[in-house]
Amino acid sequence: MNIIIVGQGKLGTTMTKQLAAEGHNVAVIDIRRETVVSVVDAYDVMGICGNGANKEILEEAGAAKAKLIIAATASDELNILTCLIAKRMGTEHSIARVRNPDYANQNQFLRSELGINMIVNPEFETANEISRIIRFPSAANLDSFARGKVEIASLRIHSDNPLCDMAICDLRKKTKAKVLICAVQRDDSVIIPSGDFVIKCDDIISITGTRSELTSFMRQCKVYKHKVKNVMIIGGGRIGYYLSKLLSDTGRNIKLIEHDEAKCFALSNSLPDVTVIHGDGTDQDILDEQHLENQDALVALTGIDEENIIVSMYANKKNVHKVFEQLYNCGSQRAHSKTAHKYHRFG
Image (cartoon, rainbow, N blue to C red; front, side, top):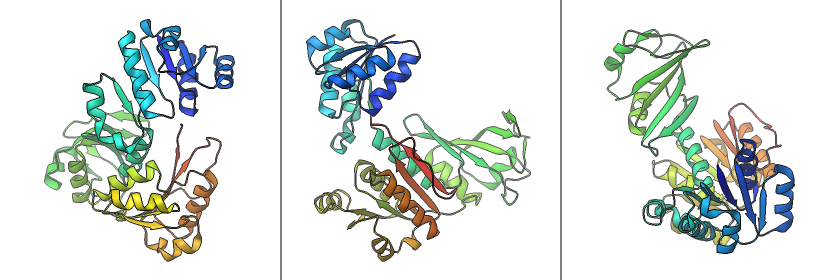
C-alpha cells in the first residue's frame, strides 16, 4: 500500500517505523531536513523536505496514486488542509490529527462535509480512557465500540462476588440491566457461555452493554470496589481539559490545579462545574492544602515525566485509591504501587 505520512514528530515517526516494517511503500514529508534524513536512513522510506500542504510536494510524494495520507504535524489547520488537497489530487483515504478543543465538536462536519475519513485526537482518547477506568474502577479491562455507544468490560469474579456460583440464566433475577455476558475466561480456556453456564470464582467475565446499563449492572450486583467521586487533576493542558469535562459531566467533584494564571482563567470559563486552582500541583503544601488525602483519584498530567512520577508517589503515600500518570518517555519506569496506571503518549 502506498502511504504518505506528513509530519515526523514522535507520532509520525512511530507510524513510519510500524508501517515500513509491515512492508508498505511509505513516503514521509517534514519541513526539517535533518529529521527527514534521519527517518529515511533508519527505515528505508522515501523522504521529502517541505510543506505537506504544498501541491508540488504532494505530487512528488505520489499523492495521485496513494491509498492513504496521514497528516500528523503540530498544526491542526495544516493537517486538515493537507488532507483536503491530497484527496482532491486522488489520494483514496485521509487521516488528520486534530487536537485543539475548539474543533472537538466539529469531527462529524470534517468527516461528512470535508471528506476526511478519520479525525484522530490523541489527547481526547487518552482522557477518555482514563475517564472510563474511573467510571468502572472494578473492571480489569474496558473497551468501547460503535463510537463509544457500546462498551465491553472484563471483570474478575472473587469469592465474595454475588455472581459467584450463579447460572447466567439467573442473572435477570438479580439485575434488570440489559447486558450480555459474551465470554468467560476460566484458567487458560475462553468459553462462550450458554444460559445454564455457572460462573465460578476466579472466572474473568466479559460483559457488554451501553455505558448506563453496565453502570446499573455493577451497582445492582454490588461489584464496585470503590466509587470514585472526588478527582484531582494536576495540569491544565489538553488532556486535563478533556478529562475534566468528561468527568464533570458525570457529576463527579473535580479539582484541576494549573500553574499558569492565564490558562486557569480560560479553564474556569470553559469548565464552570470544575474547581480550577491556580498553583503548583507538584508542591506538597498545595496538595495538602487541597486535601489530597480525601481524593478518590489523582491524575498527574504536568507534561514532565519526573514530576508526574513524584506526584503519583506522594498520592500513593496519602492512600489515594486510583493514581494515573502520563509518561512521554517510553523508557520511564513505574515507580509506585500497583494501583497506579501509566500512559505513554506519542506526539
